Length: 207
Image (cartoon, rainbow, N blue to C red; front, side, top):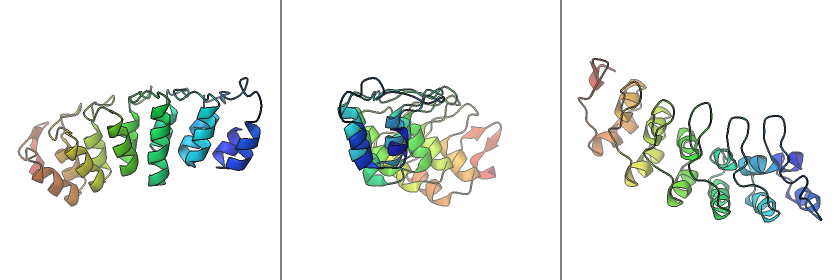
C-alpha cells in the first residue's frame, strides 16, 4: 500500500483497499510514515480521498511528528496540494501540528516552499498566521527567506504581522534584505515594515 501511494498508483491502491483493511490501513514504516503521508505528498487527491474513506488517520505522526498535512504542504502541484489540504481538514486533521525538531507547522512548510495554493487552503482552514517555529520564525520570515513573493503578499493580506522578530531579533525585512531579495523587500516596505529596526546593533541598511 505504501508503494502504491508513493507512486501515485490510484488504481492499484483502490484494489488494495478492497475488503477489510482495518489491520493495515494505518501501518507505518520505521520512520512512522503511513500510506496517507505518501499520498498527501505525491497525490493525486483521489488517492488521499480513498485512504481517508477507509479510515486512514488524518493525524498520523511520523517519528519527527510530521502529519499528512506537513507532507501535503510540500506537494508540488498547486491544485492537488489545495485539494489534499481540504480533504485532510475535512477529516478533522489538526491544522497547526508542530514538527518535533523544528517546531514547524504545515503553514511554515508551505511558506518555506512557496506553495501558495497550500498556504491559502491552510489559512482558509484557520491556520495561525503569526505563530513561530522553534527559532520564533513566522510564516512571513520563512517566505522571505525563500524569496517567495506571492506567498509574502498572501500572508500580508491575511493579517501577518510584518515586524515580528525571530530569536535573533530579525524581522522579515532583515531576512529579505540580507539575502538580497529585492522584490520581497519592496512588498514589505509597501506594507509599512519598519526600515530602521535594529538587529544585534545593525540597521537593516547594513545588510
